[in-house]
Amino acid sequence: MDRNVVRFPLPDHLPPEAALALFDCLSDLLDAVWQHYEPVLLDQILHNQNAPPDLHVEPEFDDEIPF
Image 1 (cartoon, rainbow, N blue to C red):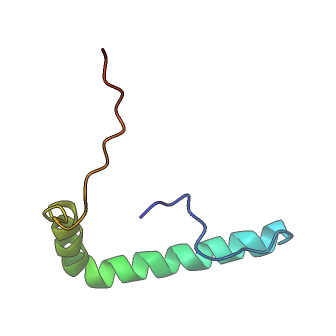
Image 2: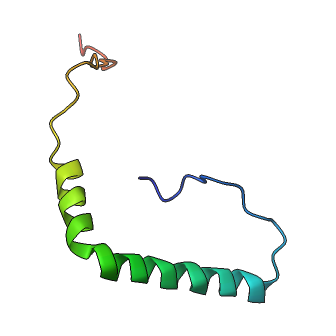
């Protein structure tokens, strides 16, 4: 998951207080989810990182040949 990808649009003109309140709320939610599901999440993260490559995807070679 790329944290720089916007998955849903955010309002452009939130007052700083509202933006901070939203950030605090989501941070608290993130912490609560992690505390509750930490072992399951760690197992899933390790599984995702160590998953074998998808054999149905053709590799793309676009390297220039140095001749």
